[in-house]
Length: 552
Ligand SMILES: Nc1ncnc2c1ncn2[C@@H]1O[C@H](COP(=O)(O)OP(=O)(O)OP(=O)(O)O)[C@@H](O)[C@H]1O
Ligand SMILES: [Mg+2]
Image (tube, rainbow, N blue to C red):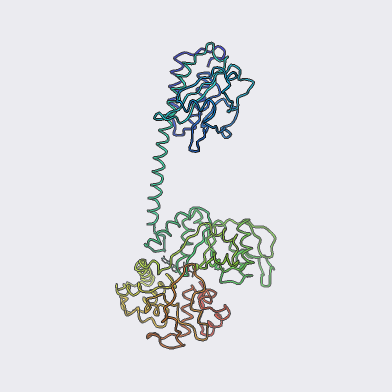
């Protein structure tokens, strides 16, 4: 490069510059980056200074997209009003303008930070950037008096106009490519979503629209570390989905640790979750890691999160906020490294309103909410689920049972207040009790005293099961559900006294207890809530009938 003082530009240099610029503009799809290089080339090859490209954007302002030889970084580029100054004339007229000496021109306003001391004799050249005759912006550059022996504005303007033309064409091309890309991206996101809706999650069956949406949400949420809150009635598959989220996440190789918050009293819950030090309380004979520690590098699944006490809510909130905790009786702070998935079948929003659940904890938990539909809202999944459970039964028991369409029809008529869990139990029971190789309609009707048999005869929303004698009748309505359930028919309102046969089905208090326990996955606290009993009462009833509580 010749020193500025002795500089005399030849046509060859102009041609070479245009050639270099066109090469730069076709080298990348990053317009801003290309632009910076082009402006640098202008400065060095044509010996100009203070070159700027601005585009009028949707806000009506002129945004500087590229600049060279300016005293500010691009991040602090000024935004100019295109209706003011020389620029406004270029934009309005679409013609180039030269100001031979900016220091002597009354219309010139220095809006791009030139040193006022060095404006004497400086010429300012502005050319429009046009796309289809529409002016979209400007290219400007300064020429200093000492930069050339003889100033040739005409030649400079021709050169700048050529460059501006190239820039505008490239900009339009890049815009078209970006628009196409956006269309492609949107289309690919749409197709991906459609495909994901078809993904099967292992051990979670469903082809209904509602379940496809759930699968899509799961596939979208799983790879991130976001906290997921699973909502839905009991037995809808919240735990199954929690597993799926873990196994589809980058933490899949880490542990999946579950804790049912409703199953434990508060003190035990605390030591179960956070662990305890030796001697922390009576019986703490050795130190013990809590589930948060055991889940390190994996996922912790807190089931029945809506059932924790206000005091415990505060403790959990702290862990979620600060990502650290102490073991009970300890003072060493332990950092958490877990992904949290929580589940509840309670109406947390209502609980927040009633001040039963902390709003701040609710928001921490409710980062991604996935709603699992009740089985009665997606009955088209029933045949698929029946096949799934039957196949599993067959492979576990080396049998080859099939089910008649008539039997499936009966199952389709039920409302399944215990949702998929109840259907699963029902198939298991029918399969176990059937001596032949085919489950028929009749097999569906003779499941004595079990909850689902009462529902088979109901076409409206069924009551969970008949009331246990001596226990309050309101016990039959699940206490709270996130989704409203239709009211029982008046026929359902009557209570059947103990042992009385109802519509040909004998019902015992014991059966009703077992049914409630089954429906609640053998979690006593939940079954107690379903029956409207206290945990003590249900404990007493289970002992009374010698019902062994399955450890799940
Ligand atoms: N879509 C499904 N496909 C296959 N099995 C399912 C599906 N949904 C639920 N299940 C089965 O139903 C049973 C109950 O599901 P799960 O324990 O996940 O329900 P839940 O919503 O967590 O219930 P709860 O609120 O009572 O804890 C499990 O055995 C589970 O495997
Ligand atoms: Mg569960």
